[in-house]
Image (cartoon, rainbow, N blue to C red; front, side):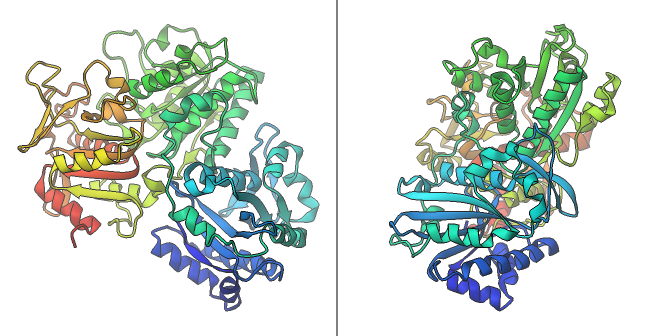
Length: 629
């Protein structure tokens, strides 16, 4: 998304007038982005003066296009500064500049090759090396913006640390960062002339093809690289998902913990928190590849573990035939937590426990364990839990940050080897068109927590409310060209087909009939080419994502007396998994129902279509998004 976007001459005027920071802040608000804190405002004011000094170079044309705080497609990340135009050979070029205020930084360790420690946000923090950060932004733009894949368009990432002390150059240019320094040239305080030379060599006139960044931003978005589609390629070593910002610093911390476990043979527990769409599963699978391939550390016995069978079965299906390390069977890479109690202590070098909030105590009668958190820690020397406490959807779910810490301490893990909290949280949004505002809107709508986002005005996310589920289904069908649109529903509807009580499970009005995904292939519902007309449940979509999702909200969610409220009396009697209908704790039942709909409403990368059986709720949703006004 274009925030500030002007020709060079206008940018220089805005800086000279002292208005540039105010203009950027206002534009961010207009575009629906958060931002503009006193520290960020000061950084704009400071950095833009440095950039204006660079751009006064007459070799860089006044018509060159400047963009500040460019919103990267399908993420909540923004690029600091971009210049576009053409070179002397008429090549179209885009120069990305990651700006930093730092005066110095520190190397964290020889293992953490993507990370430096710098003074950020009032404290010393582990952050991505600026050259890696700029490079990852380039890769993400190329992955998702169709115009950026034009072979005649060249994107050059760079980093400019305009306050950085010359005597500390050897730190930020340490050989461990050599890959990123080659991918994205680094310019420090004394390199202003070199940066001007670099830009002038790429951009000496306006592109004859018009405004390049406008074409990138307003052009077609490629089919989204949902994790389930790119997994086989990723496991072959192709980086379909380039980790960004806090993802990559946490990735480095995990590799460091793994190396330390190899050395001292002590147990370690890492807890990585992140809401829907923040890239927990992407990070977990990237780590699985590293731990099993031996690319950056000694290969070990590792597994990706999740209680939810849908992502696990989908990943296994997609990995069939992929070139994974010969000594590791595909089926051993993706496993269930059931049966861990039968394994010896430290059987695994590392377990990557995704959807850790779904772990349970003893159930089903088919295993002899006591508690799946306990079994995970016992079975692995390094246990990495990926968790979102607000995604618990069943009374049986016991996973929480506190319970993991408690079990780690009970099992003798040294407190210094239990890592969580600051530095281990994912916040950037990679779903819902990269909109933090949309997730905040859902939280506010459902009453999970109050946020400032009480409407979806000006949000570039395709959210619609329908009065008829059949119309919603047909609109969704139009967007299923790449098999990336699906319908999902809450707990309200009976399992008639499975229980031989009828030919349809969900019947609404005179025209809408549908079946649950219960034909013996439910775990593969998200990727099967023939499953569009089936409706997915929470268990077959949690942990997965689509381009577009259609959500059928049953009568367990109503709008009464000026608020959205739950009605667990409407939960189907055939629901044997959530425990909501018979939960004695009203507050817990209310929370689980809201969590369920938050998960369903956050499965779409590009859009979410909604039909609510409760007419009052439909009307309220329309009002909230300004539909029909």
